Image (cartoon, rainbow, N blue to C red):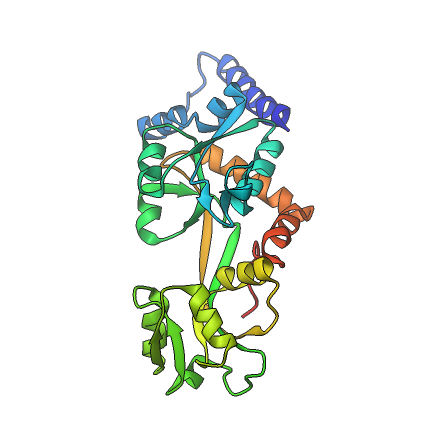
Length: 281
């Protein structure tokens, strides 16, 4: 696959040279605008990766189930880690991880310490102004989680007057409050899930990935999703602004991995189902 990208660049370069050489003295010469020429000549993001033979990836290494070490000190793995490994294989290059704290990860990207961030980076309007993103490889709506025996909560409107367990510092607390729920304050997801399982609260709201990871890690079967938000969080690989060539190549790789089932397989390994595609509404 690496050969495909190198060959493409070579052919394009040869074609441009032949076109320049075949221009006669009386032929008009098309001149690219300075802006377009500068833009094209400065985007060597893909060429640099192919020449180096490696894709340098910024990731936390402490963010389970996306980027973490087995048993705390074993091999680096996780959903994002395995997806970017598969992408690098499609590109025909090795992958090298630079483990970085979240607070410094974007600064590291901007400083050129790595080519891409693989760390469940949500696509937001503010970030899109500063960074280039790949196609999303993770989709996660907010979900209402209830005990399996609960049958009278099927929408956010049904939370009116019901008790939900929420962390008071999360966005899900705001959504629960807007839905008219009575809030039982908790420290996090684990405590909320326990209260729902014990029947001490009616529900909890969180993102779908958190719920799926909980099921995989604990084998719990007593909780179900009663409803989900229309808004869906999308996560993608983040590149330095202007790294369009590398981002496009990664998009091609992701499309191949989606088509051959690799993304679905990796997703199922970590979440029990495919989170690489947008959920049905």
